[in-house]
Length: 292
Image (tube, rainbow, N blue to C red; front, side):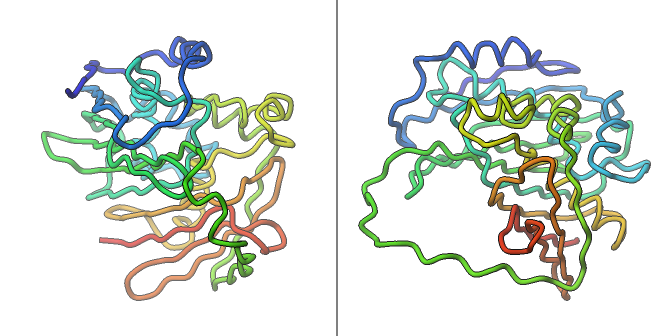
């Protein structure tokens, strides 16, 4: 049975939900795609010109414009995502999930000040060799028409039946440099700054000490900051992103402070882009952007 939570004008408060996630010690264990519940949540009457929009542009590097950044509805809908993943019926621990991909399909540019209805739901749960994967499918509507859609793909790692029987993995080839290039600087406080403006206060992003508590040598940049900053840099080079599809896979952690290389190349149908580490030997993310 589908369970839907409804909100008006703004989503649920994040702090109580994070507290709930930390106390959800009973969640975890082994799960299959069939265990995933049908959960959804929506907000009506969402303003796009919130006080955080200016700070979001600054943190991610977007130019001032009458149009919203293509990633901005993700921020507006983020409380709904946390609401779904802290629901009592959701079987997985929030802090045990890995964000591995994000696809945005924008039918047209969203104007600053436009009023949206946002809806998010758990979708497409599947069992994979890496564990249990699922999408949070988010739709933004204006005047009854869906104009923006996002698939955020998350992974819950768990043992699979292979147990290494497929043999050793071959080391990946060094990623190819593309024609367009820009340097990406991620300062040491970018995790905290992006966390404040986005609401994503996962400890692995905020401080070296909190990241070490979760097994990282130091804190890492948010994947959605990396994606947004790459799009901001490409937008400055190639023009506004209006009717676009941007599909991104998150790869190696981007430790902060750190330096990366954004490289991209446009052909007749799409732009391929990669954010590489500073010596261009491994990707932090890979993606494609198509217009129209």
